[in-house]
Image (cartoon, rainbow, N blue to C red):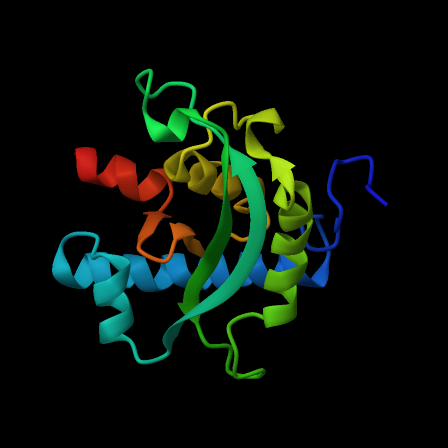
Length: 184
């Protein structure tokens, strides 16, 4: 059953006061504290990968997901093979990064990641992606951004969404903040 907020899992998807939302906020605050400490020490914001290498208590958790779906790319040139409807066995990953909690000895429960991604997988699996709102031109890039926008309010520690169309092609999206910082 869907809640009035549009979320299948309001306790996970950012509902104020929920245990997951409180924990995510605490971890996000801790991440910002660690980043600010590094900025003061080194003069500039450091990439997340270097931060993880410097602090042994920062980890990245990854949750895989899979779905089957059809799509076509209406904006490619006439005659391009991807302009025709076709399908893929998509594989994806969502990744969160942050400090290990001293009490639980984990970053976040993998079950919480599953509860966030499963409703999206249900919306994508065995559907024509072009018919889903926001995916009129469902490239791997557009799909990765679309998934990010759907789940990032629930996962402040989200650092990456990866979509794999085939066993040799994939796209990873790192969020608007990283893209904006590269433009400066």
